[in-house]
Amino acid sequence: MPGIIEADDLTKTYNNLEAVSHIRFSVRKGEIFGFLGPNGAGKTTTMRMIECVSPRTSGTLSVFGMDPENNPAEIKLRIGVVPQESNLDPDFTCAGNLLTYARYFDIPPKKAEKQVKDLLDFVSLTEKRDVAIDKLSGGMKRRLILARALINNPDLLILDEPTIGLDPQARHLIWERLRLLQTEGHTIVLTTHYLDEAARLCDRIVIMDNGRILVEGKPADLIRDHVGSEIVETDNSPEVISCITDMGLPHEIAGDQVLVETGASRELAKTLLDRCRTGRVIARPATLEDVFLKLTGRNLRE
Amino acid sequence: MQSIWSVPRVSWRGINVWKRNLEVFCKTWKVNFFPPFIEALLYLFAFGLGLGTYVGAIEGVPYVSYIAPAILAITAMNSAFFECTYGSYVRMYYQKSFDAIIATPLSIEDVIAGELLWGATRSVISVTIMLPVLAVFGVISMPSSLLAIPLAFLAGLTFAGIAMCFTAITPSIDTLNYPAFLFITPMMLFSGTFFPLSILPEILQYIALAVFPLTHTVALMRMATLPFTDALLPLHIVWILVATIIFCVISINLMRRRLIV
Image (tube, rainbow over all chains, first blue to last red):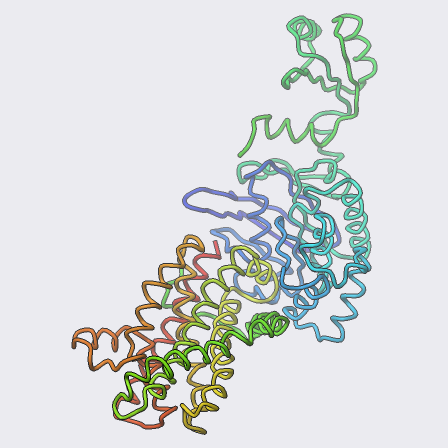
């Protein structure tokens, strides 16, 4: 069965620069699919092409089996978008924002009223119904944008950095709501910088860098395949490095830390303490962050 | 890349943008209602009691009746022009409303068409508020002056289209001041508004007729409020219609070029 989104050789060029370069991916119905990557990797550009607001330069893209170029309105009727930046309408209250948005989707006023009531409840903003947008906290705005994206009961929900700048409570609330939406049958595509978010939430992810997809798979599989199951971190000093090198262990230097991938972190940590006399050793499970940094490097991005 | 002359694919969905703007306008109707009302009174006192006392009559028409249609035309111009420059720019750039709307089934063409329609509607609202004031003072004839309402819509659409072209190319909100004082202000003074075009040097008369939409708007308004008709009536109407189509089409294409990348 073809996926909800099918992209092949998808490319987007701005001013002779390939923001998205020949990527191929497929999003299946009902899954949470994550796009990870450093700033400038091409995640948002990819989202904008799926959302039918940015025309592709070349390649093929289909959403619900339709081409964004030919059927933008039909596709957009069935998707909900949570953008990276808040673009709530400051001229309206919380409820006013949702009602105005409902009209863009041709939802009849009566149905919209009920929908707005349910959605404000869903994102725990019922008490803020008649409050102006500039009186809301960052977390409330984010939740309201999520509610707005759900006004048309979309088959596909696209979220660009859904929890950016939120406190842990607000992040957990958003995650919980997204999982609930998944159980209700919505397909969800999101981009994120937060690797714990991707690991918790996503069924499958791709990691992008410089407009290309580096890897694709389930978070757990990617961790196992690329960094092993556990990591030992210790201080970066010449003695420790030579000791680790003598032991023949592959390692990675990250600032004042040395990372060693392993299957048995406790044993290795003990060995390092005994043989290399390091001051500080941390044994921990490998995370998606290790995969991410390994694949995209540690250099700062613009 | 699409040419600025291509016919934009506008759908009926654009009306939802018009409704949004109308709703916001109605929420603050008290603030919005008074400027045209007060402006009409101010013009009447300044020109009717003040200047009019000295001027007496122009072309056999009492001065205050001569400028009354110009007041309507200038109001139609300003309402649409400022709505579709500063108003639209704020919604586009600061409020990111256009970005939010094009994530729904509306296209950018629909959004801009709705904005243009709203700009023309602002002209209609302002002129409609002014008409009874002018009528009460007996400076316009009724019912022929009611034609000022459809005229305000047509002229409003012209100025909305022109304004939206500037909005589409302006680098920032500050640079919108240039068209306001290099284009709108001269037009307000030299379009046969407060004195007849015929007393200007011939070359300026031609320029006013060729490039100032306000010249044609004032002429048509004057025919409606005095009322009278002359041989130039079809010219004025055709000029306005053609300008409206050209500027509305170009403005939508320029906006698309600015916002869809």
